[in-house]
Image (cartoon, rainbow, N blue to C red; front, side):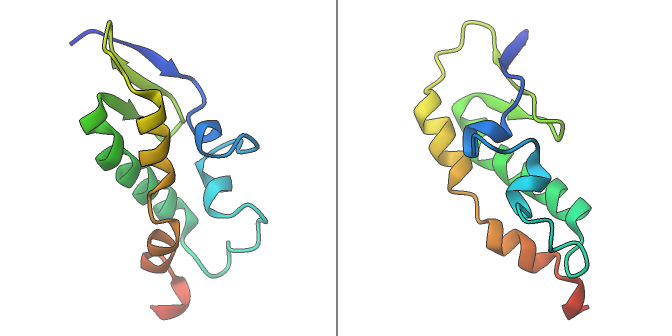
Length: 99
């Protein structure tokens, strides 16, 4: 499969203000002490990929999204699938206070 870049900044598809996936999990910067945010970001990207790979898209932790050249990608479906990922569930799995 030969791929091409669909988006160089996938987090902004979910929230226009988002500089990265970490921001999507912790927009106020207040969760660092209670959550393993590095692992949460990794889990988040994994969950996003579970949602968007069936739609022909692959997302990296750096925020680059690729698809097969010439693929007919339903961008609205990709955006919705990414927005539907359970952020709260991911944070709860990475809660350091419950360890």
